[in-house]
Length: 462
Picture 1 (spheres, rainbow, N blue to C red):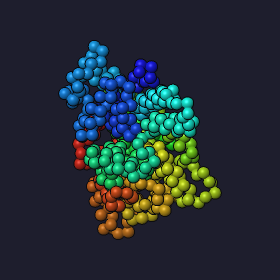
Picture 2: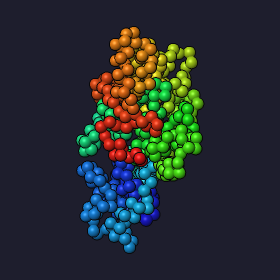
Picture 3: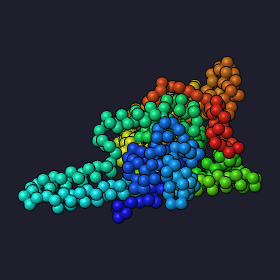
Picture 4: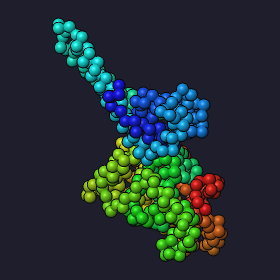
């Protein structure tokens, strides 16, 4: 048995990563089982952890006390001391999918070796008169069973996969998705960011869509999900600085101009150092095609596994066919990106700069037709959220007002909307369309927060 294929280090990293971030379990449990581990203690721990998570409990060295068998001994370490060591020394959550795949690959290779030995034994014991066809059939059966263990059960059966998804959602009391950093976004969309979804975020130029998206990126990383940010306007260093200024409550302009205090600079550097170990990639893009974006996303997934992909912004993506009409070309782009999210099992956010239609209306609040490509191009989006800052439109609305009463009405709204923004659900798969929620807009820190939740609870450094 000692000569069989194995990868004990990968097994240790898988267990350590799940103990560190329980969300890692859901990312690998669809294809990795306890029987795939070579080391018995790892099989036992994976099963115990899976049972606890399945019951809605947190699995870590504190909560697992009493759940780990007292008979476990790993060298000179007791079972619980070994759990603590795995938790402290082996977490690599950003590489959990690759590590679990390595464990699965070793298990498949062990299965092939054992199948070959069984075939050799069967062939050796067979009588001289045995039919060659029978031997070939048995070989094919043995190897098919071994290789089949390398794939999720019933891979081609959509009904079985649907049953598994329903069961998992029932166990977790929620769907498997990346949580929004702000509850109001979940309310207007009707759900969190489901894997395989493509959600549009629509805002005016300077309306805060990039700031909103970067807050979501950091929140996803904190929850254990890798993030790929494709930026059309900012260099990677600028993206990192903007996130750090949001988190440390430092005005980005002061940081850029060298006017920040020593304490503020120290807080920003602390955030930046913490981000160095997070699964976060930023790529500056020019005018890529969807094929180029697909190449970047798939390379990201091979390195980190599935996660959140943010594309800033839609007008940067080139049409494959330049001869097509705008709506048709945009619809093609959205369709390609939606298919990419489904194939790679990522959650996608596509930022859209609102067109100028709102300037011709008395009420410039966004509508579906304001989206890039028009309302007809949105069929491939699973949801569309508008981020609307009415405070930026007050002067324009006053210039369009025809009566004194209308001007007074608009002026009265200035204080009401100051420091606020509005999220509008223009398209939602699992919610009524048109749901609106007010949120807090902190322009000096280029960030948004909930009006109903404590900002401290969302993890922001103040």
